[in-house]
Amino acid sequence: MEFKVKEIAEILHGTVQGDPEAVITTFARIENGKPGAISFFANPKYEQYVYESKSTAIIVNNTFEPSQEVAATMIRVENAYEAVAALLDYVTAQKRSYKRHRGLHCHIRCSAKLGKRVYVGDFAYIGKKAKVGDCTKIYEQVYIGDNVQIGHHCIIYPGVKIYPGMVIGNNVILHANTVIGADGFGFAPTADGSYKKIEHTGNVIIEDNVEIGACSCVDKSQMGPTIIHQGVKIDNLCQIAHNVEIGENTVMCGQAGIAGSAKIGKQCVIAGQAGVVGHLTLADRTTIAAKSGVISTVKQEGMTFGGFPGIPYNEFMRAYALFRRSGRTDKK
Image 1 (tube, rainbow, N blue to C red):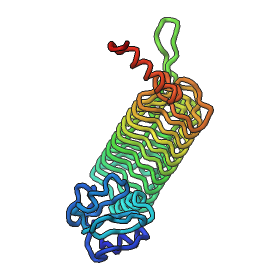
Image 2 (cartoon, helix red, strand yellow; image 1 turned 135 degrees about the vertical axis):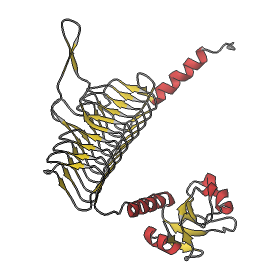
Image 3 (cartoon, one colour; image 1 turned 180 degrees about the horizontal axis):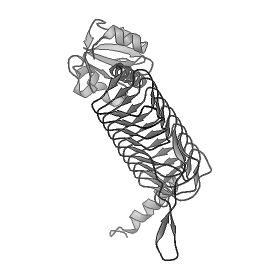
């Protein structure tokens, strides 16, 4: 990475206050700034670092009025937080520009179809009639089964396993050791007390601009698809069971789980280690607090739930206050 400040300002549609020829070679948090770095300032709590930072340049809001002299060159933009995100995207995209590559001992079946500038790492496997779009990068030791479809500009990190027949959209990122399309946890009890496996004949459909963290699993459905709609972001170590449907732009944090056939609305937030029982529906913009468990359908949009079982968050906090008070030994 090496840009002049004026080049960054042009990318971000910002204005320069200071030296436009200064050279930027790295990013740094504003409190850990160093020469050659660019930082950003958006939270008023960090204003002191604007004056102390050793960063060469700082991205600030147009409305920022410094109360002291600022040594760094400032790039003024409409929204500093959004601007630094856009800059990170731009820099990352530059790094992802690569040529067609076929790694050592990778195995690509002759009926597979790969687009332009597809990167395939060492020991990767691409099955029969699989389709991979342009500019997708498939890292080392990835398994892509027969009849899998993967869109363009995807990144499939090392160790990912995509079972046969799965469908992956465009601009999808799957982090290391994620599994797409394992059988759902479906077993029928029998008269002798044992369990008979229920075969899963469906698939998983992941739409555009989805990112799934490391070691997460999205199970294929018994019939029909498990669907992850566009813009969904899933953290590491998450479980999405068979026949689940997750709405657009929903966020799911680490170690959370969704049981079979649940339907999650758009723009929901499922915090760390939270759980959703199967066969229920969450309305759009539902938030589930960390370690909470929702066991019944949520019909009203925009509600927040806490506790186990999950109840509206205000009720949960009042109940928690009573619970803490009941355990005090200094009550009069």
